[in-house]
Image (cartoon, rainbow, N blue to C red):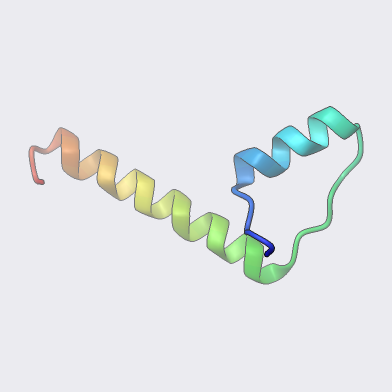
Length: 50
């Protein structure tokens, strides 16, 4: 089963292998959505909203 890698995991693979990895538009959008979710969670946390 294939799993979707996070942007950080993709960056790590690029750094290890010394070459750029092509990602699909869908994978890129998922990475963005994950980033937005983490940012929103962080902002809500510092505002005291759970």
